[in-house]
Image (cartoon, rainbow, N blue to C red; front, top):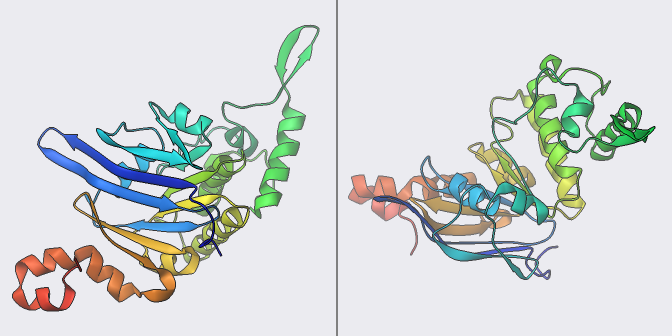
Amino acid sequence: MTDSLPYRVRMTGISKRYHPIQVLDDVSLTLKPGEVLGLVGDNGAGKSTLSKVLSGAIIPDAGSIEIDGEVVSFASPADARAARVEMVYQDLSLCDTVDVAGNLFLGREPRRRIAGLSFLDKARMHAEARAMLDRLGIVIADTRLKVENLSGGQRQSIAIGRAASFDPRVLIMDEPTAALAVAEVEAVLDLIRAVSARGVSVILITHRLQDLFLVCDRIQVMYEGRNVAERHVSETSIEEVVNLIVGRKFAARSAGAAGSTGVPA
């Protein structure tokens, strides 16, 4: 398993404040090659902010990031992408009126030169798009289909496939199974398994706690901008994870709750 491997990602002492609100407070996160980490917490826990720090969308006030042992500093998502860190946002950022191949290669389209002029190489793009989909086990009949005509699960698969097909070291996914039908959820989870099996390190942010136990190796729980717990999935349960997510909130309301669901020190 991944236990003996060196860290792919090490985030240490990450802090971020927006005026009076401390969004992240001395947060740490580690991730090994091929490992799937479930990052969970209630709304406002800081999990999305932490992932955006790793993806270069937010610059932290303090802390350090290492990728494969090298200290990095990201000032933009382009910097993170150059370090092979990709993030798939909940809104997917797909172009509905563009076909599947065009979305997979968006901004990275293959080109060819004819008489000194540069043209889009559509034949190559569709051939490589088909190879990408087949390699990841994504079932879409025709790469010329417009994205607006696809199901929610297919759209999510394209967004993940686009991020996964350009050799990332780290792939962050924000709520990839939200609002999907049961069969589509399973297809996305299969895709996460396929990506991690290729050695890509995955961070999965989700409110569907049952998904964590199907694809994750570890779970990290955040509460009000801090780490509160970390568990291997084989050593915990949905009930414990729920208690870790909401335990302090319940403990503050009731002395009885404090005795049964308080977060460990």
